[in-house]
Length: 141
Image (cartoon, rainbow, N blue to C red; front, side, top):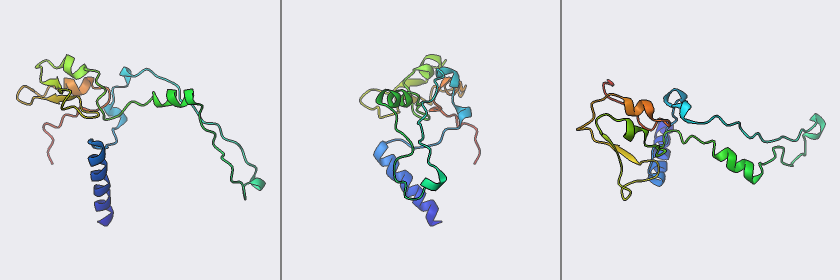
């Protein structure tokens, strides 16, 4: 149990600092067609002979050049964070999903749902490329 409490504390600190919950979004919850496929920039490794392993303290994995590092970072799909694509706002038939006023927005939270208007059609969640919107209606605990 102390391990579970420690994880909860780590999550609480992360959430306090970032103002957003850190969750692993399953790939099935992403709308991958929204993202353009881009190849990964692989780092090169310097081989070391079995005899040379002991006492070898040099870097074996080479870093990326600045342009490669920037391109690699741009591959990030920001899983679970709002991308401000407005798909949910555009496709909601009840206009229940709306943009959060800029004064109230925080990193990754740019839309909100008016549950008095929401009919639970799930269209917003279906068109969300990052898995930010999750429908929880009808889930029994």
